[in-house]
Image (cartoon, rainbow, N blue to C red):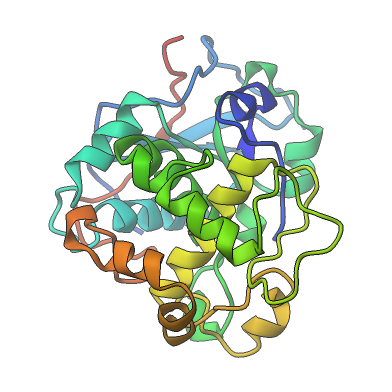
Length: 292
């Protein structure tokens, strides 16, 4: 999970960390957190923020090194998270409004190296996503689309966490974090040198604080709940960190959060986003910095 810039990450108790064709309508509300105030036009050979897609008022900003097809795919994934039945209206207006109010956004760069090398002082803020990890037709190819992870982080951190703090809050004592503490075999502010025997969530990135680990936990739980982690060979890739990678394993091993995600009150998106959104058309537009 990654958030750009580090100053924005700190405000939500997270750290900068990393793991793992349509045209038409745009919406006018919700802009990225504390984005820059002036449009920067890149010179020859320089990477710059040049385009965006607005998804029900939530922006995805992208550099010139991000292919349009990857940007539109990410926009489709976000649209399907917000409007899973694809009728053109966000399914959970409380969560949607929370994202708008907290200025949730996605910032796309071409590669991780590009993001590492970038001067973020004059860049938009938001949840980071790389084009190189954004996979088109992922399930057909039997691979995992990491756009699901990074975009879901934004939806939960800026949406569900804010709309339902007692349930999805990332501080100690919420439904989410109590379940996480059980999954890890105890409450740890940072990943311990060794997790207790029987733990099924063993996140080991020492740069990730308690809130960051909770954000990662709901990502693992949710994507397993909808079947997104049930891919050939996937457990071999993620088993060092997460064991309950199928809906059946999750229901048996994490019944508390399984019941929460099954509760229609929260209007959790149940269909795995594939980036092909059938709602209002998404369009790549010129980059417009948010108001400070």
